[in-house]
Image 1 (tube, one colour):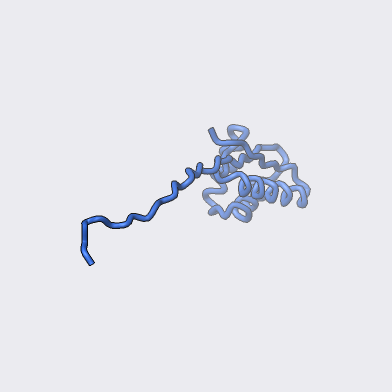
Image 2 (tube, one colour):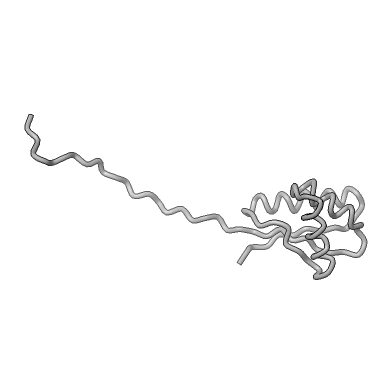
Length: 103
C-alpha cells in the first residue's frame, strides 16, 4: 500500500439554515376589578414568578395599563396567556392576558 497523500474526503451535505422561531410577548392588561393579590397569585401559579416579581409586573400594569409578563415562542405564549385568562375567568374576574409578536 502506497500513500500518495490523497485521502478520501466524505461529501458533506449542506445543512439547511434554520431560522430562530419568532418570539411573542405575553401581556397583562390592567383592569379595575381584579384584586391585586389575585393577579400576583396568577403570575406565580402560571408564570412561576416570585412574589416580588409578580408584584412588580402587576404594579407596572396598574400604572401603565399593560405590562409584559414574559417573552417566549408563540405556542408557549398563547398557552400561558389562555391558562392565566381562564384561571381568572373561572374565579369570576375579568383579568386578561394577550399575546403579540416581539419586534
